[in-house]
Length: 300
Image (cartoon, rainbow, N blue to C red; front, side, top):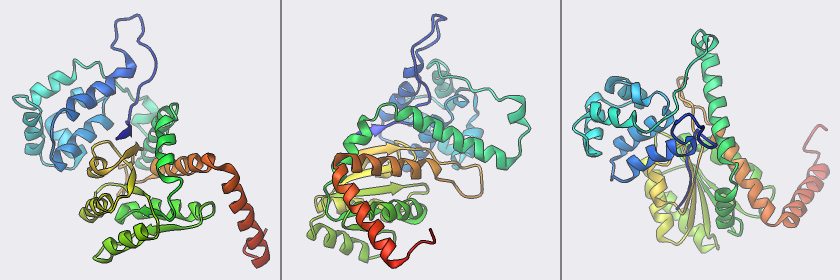
């Protein structure tokens, strides 16, 4: 499974004795990935990765609030990692050389709306840093580019990015099937897509993760589909069922999460798919433009 991790550091270590920046988040991920974690524990691990700068100084109550779990769950998480309790885990985190994020005075006094925008900007900045290595996206694109039809799966919070991707993908691919409703017919539609020749499925897995989504991915694997998942973190349940995982963070500053970075990552993936056969993609775009002109679809 190829994974684009939600790393926040890049570059070489300075001569000041600080821990190498490029390895800080990877060491944090390694600490968690060595263990079999429950869905709740994966949620806590993902929360700590997202708040790496603050993690070594957060109390178990603060971690529980950030992750949306109970305080005893945080304690059980620490024990599952082999520590006597959360204080021992926090002490271990302080040895990893995680970068400490400090807020400017302007950030401290900003309102919740501005805070949400800054959080989304931070997710996009991390995504830009990850895409400095285009290899994982190129590999994911190769898994999907030749699938006819191409299946796009997104349930509940994953519905919007799945529909958006499907709308644009249909302009450059001859058959795109967006599956955005659960229920007993979902497995039937996966079977039908496979019978029609589908070889690849793109999944958008956003929190909270629907159980139906995991079940659908199991069905997709059983019928032989290759799965690429865009998720908010490497610990999403869908990751274990995927051939490739691309990570883009979501923002939880508002009543509902915002998914700007995952949607942008979907567009980047679609671009990489077009780059595999640019002539074919261009021909379909030109045909769409011709038909749009004939039908008078747009004002200008």
